[in-house]
Amino acid sequence: MTAIILIPARLAATRLPNKPLAQIGGVPMIVRALRQAELANAGPVAVAAGDPEIAAAVRAAGGEAVLTDPALPSGSDRIMAALDLLDPDGRYEHVINLQGDMPFVEPAAVRACADLLAGDAACDISTVAAPEHSVADRSNPDVVKAVLAMNLDGRTGRALYFTRSTLYGDGPVWRHVGLYGYRRGALAQFTAASPSPLEQREKLEQLRALEMGMTIHAAVIDDAPISVDTPADLAAARAEAERCAK
Image (cartoon, rainbow, N blue to C red):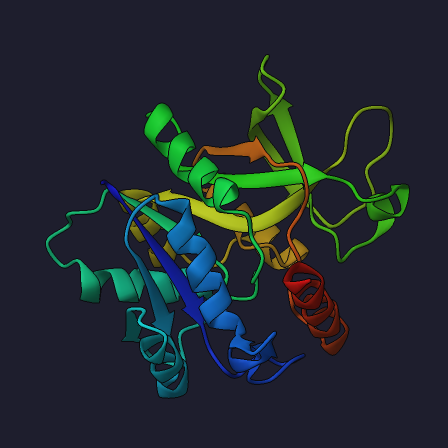
């Protein structure tokens, strides 16, 4: 395989401290994300841990983890550091960045990122998007919208922009899901660059890549997975675990 899946995680989240270790149905959240990544069968999986407690939890569950500097500024920087440690010889051409706060992400979404990279040499970065949950999503700044030039298949497209702003007019509005695939060289260039003006304005890291001239392709998935950022999100994730266990 040419892809490796890396899951960045650290304990110092501002809105929900220690969230990678939060129990969801008796399983740490980071371990649930690890299991979903393994089910994707898109390549080996490892956690890029910013803290030894995270690495210990992953290893206790039989997973692989590598310790990275807790002061790294972003998940992208963390997976770049982990990649250098795990694969110094450059065996893996593609790197999938799965957020550790997506405990129920569908394995198909992870595979979609890998497939976009494998299927088109013009794709520097891959990602996924989902249909809006409601019309209210269009004006919600917490919902990041992906503006896509869709292909004829209606399931893939090229990203023109990402925004927190309101989108008007007819046509679908795609919720961006923070799951990425990178060509190794693109990841190295991206993490070596400084934050860009649009990135700083919208507080969206992916805009740096677009300003650098990189091409981002997106696959449409049926629904956005639960992303745990707040105590309310954690409660929803625990309710989902209970529902799935019945």
